Image (cartoon, rainbow, N blue to C red; front, top):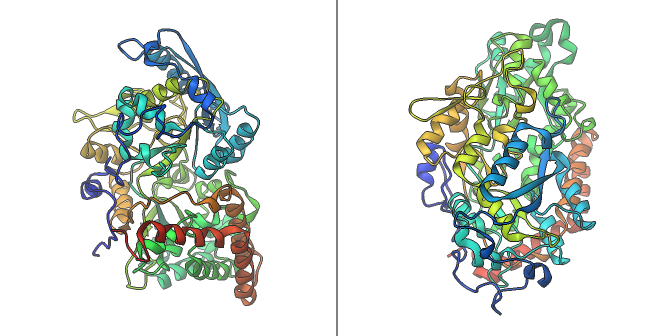
Length: 580
């Protein structure tokens, strides 16, 4: 099927699609290090507090190797999943390795501040409000950052980057234009540096291959076939699960229901959507501002729930609750929408443990049954951006913090954290491709060396994905990165997304004031709406309930955001549908 692209945001994207690498070329970059207004110039804005800027000591504190002559102590956030194997990630091999290496390389003493992974915005907001935030924080919620910046709680990073950019070669090499992704070009305020996402996929539809085979069904290629497969799973529970038939779940829905609906929602977004409309409706990354698309998808999910086709208990289990994953590993789930590689990941072990519990034939395959108004599969990929890294005004040493970000962006550091110890976690092939070694039943990875997140995402804070500095080597390594999974399955899943990917260019406008502080309340209300209209509303009452609740959602602030984003677009580009 021919790929449909809007306007590519990256000049080297074709290479990225072939070779598993999102390039450093992103939206038009901000000023290069050392360009523009220098720190202290009138044209450069004050930091979140002038006193914070004044505490920055100069480069005379560094030797020729950018090592601090006197030791520097930093408190750094560390996302923690409270894994059974590593109850406290700050005491893991990886956390201790980082502490030892950055002390040796830069004389920086790292003190970890554990942050619960699934509650990170709320937890860090509490620390920021109390003036107790770590010196380096990172979050997916940039609204939190800008909210506290507006209250004088964040350091403006732009003057620091102008002053010290030449000391940060690894960070600039890795992040490219992402460094200035959130720069306000009018005020020269930069409250956060944006990490890099290697674009190998977003979300996909997975279905049980062995169940299809048992029932004599072909992999579904359209909506009707997919829906009928779910009904066949439900109606043949005795055949598929025997004594465990009462626990069969045709389709697994997560508490983060908008994510579980993504592939279906995106199929209802008009194929001819303009850059303008994509920007105006782009506040919520679950696409909830695309009201009509969500209405249609939620109506279908409501019907599925009523028919017993989706997990009846999904509302009862909050984000991070292992119950949903346990159902998958026990072999009770027929289909699921998840991150493109989630079923393959060693830490989650969906497929590998399912095969232990059920048998070697148990397996998920990728299907693309949902089509847009032109009959094509479409998946809207984000720009190559990831988490937002910030320094609160309580940070005593922004220069040392920047040096740390540069160190954690070194390719050799990224590689070690992502793939671990040779012979324990990895085997390096003669061509340089890295194969991840799985664990045996006796836990061949010592508990303190267990990697609780894919490629140590929780501690490798400037990147999300594989990056060895060579896109072809990255692709080969990616295919070998999931123990117990055939490399061909990884490449097939990756292609299922990338072959149908669509991008829009990154839009830079003035700050949208109405967005400040609204991410958490609107996201929470979105989830309440979806839980209500799917699991607590009869099909006969669906439309009225959805309309009433969505109208309240708009009144909470969503409509103000939509209106202001529209106005900001017109101010920047005029009353047009595309950027120049």
